[in-house]
Image (cartoon, rainbow, N blue to C red; front, side, top):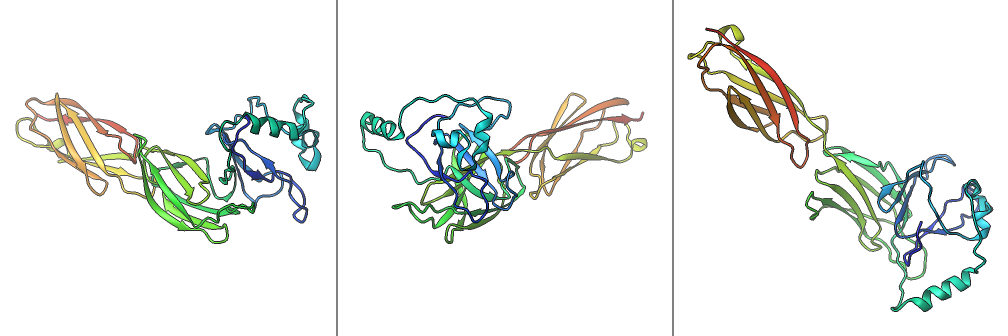
Length: 299
């Protein structure tokens, strides 16, 4: 994990609850989520590098001090990797870093290790999210106290919109909301700029149809068939959008209202079997869906 000017404290040691937890710095391209309600060994629920979920099969290169690298302070996982010692002291590395900086360097108080319960890796549009955050405030000198969390929707074109706020009290907050559609949502601590982003997945609605009248009453040059399409959502928001129906070389459009679209077809000029293709067009909240069926027209 690359070095960076931005660092935030993190406690990754599986010590007993009463023992002090040492702090490690994380690069600004790394974010970990810890769930303090889980047992020791299962508290790290998410690790992302450059915004991507950690690949357990990949090899990552990190830098740390020789003591934790040898498993000190209960960071025993370091022993599973291979290591090399540079021979440089942390004091000298810090001095070289600051001497090479052309501009003044200020601390970044955004947490790279976030304590959260109930946070998932991805969410479906329309899903109910329930997340509890703790320890959002840092104890470092000059660190701001967070006053609120902003809930931000990121649209597919990259534009953003704040759709809600939640107060932060003593570094703690509980967030309850319905996930909006789009590319992703972000939860941003306004004061520290701590940001958690999660991708939003669109699900396809379940489709079903009914044809009126029944097949034995549909006659060529006489009957105008009515098709009723039902679209059922698996999440908390109702299906809205548009449906197209193609049959006998014609295309019909209908608006979905309360999960239902209705289309009245023209009279069929000849008897026979007709293939009907029904499509629901993807939108901000739902993926596309498609259904086919056969319509029989009597003489």
